Image (cartoon, rainbow, N blue to C red; front, side, top):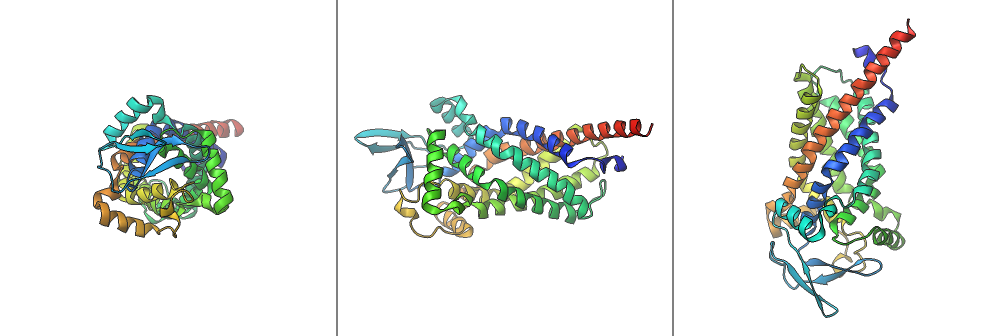
Length: 338
């Protein structure tokens, strides 16, 4: 069986990973929307109202931070706008579905697919190729090779799709933002701040995703080496467990990533952002001092609700796809050799 696995082509690995990416996007987008909205409201001094001009949404400023679970009243042009606040993951799910409509839980589905499919293809294909080069042997317990392969492949994938990730996060963080408005925000930001502004948040993204990948692949490959069944169900469970552990430990960096990316298009409108942006650890320290350690894990249940099944679905469908192509290659090899 080992010899057959070496004949698995990168193109076949790409197809196997694409199918998993599509399934994951459909299932996990609502959790991602809720997580982003919960993290976005941590910016307590600035409350975003559901009133938009042609380029960016109108901002209103509060003299003191609003109560965590209280709606905020903003006066704009003589009209009072109510902005809902979310107290928990469940509360956010219910309020978004009730106030904005169930379809808004899948807001950003298009950019999610545009981001996730190429990112997953790059990530999984590169990982499978690199882990062999780093000395990993299937069935044997090892930590170094999966960690190195996970870190390298994830870093490359993050850099490749970071601008799409930034646009998606901005889109999901706003209640009524339209694709046309998002496109205008991106154009105006690039004109004002340069092309590199589209990689804002790349630091905390790498700090979140690189350790996540190292922990995830080391955990998954260890569980896989202990598993004697190697079937769809065991891959599903191993992926979920490894994903939950890695997601829980890297959530603070996910909070910071959201902070940096929702600032897209707000630099000129908000005087708070005219000074140099703080670094990742400065934001973490500020959140800890002002809102407590719990703020660093804002949206953790939505993140776990997304990451655990996403990892389970992705890895099990990917392993299933690889086994399908292995069988196909095996039969082709038998026919070729007569």
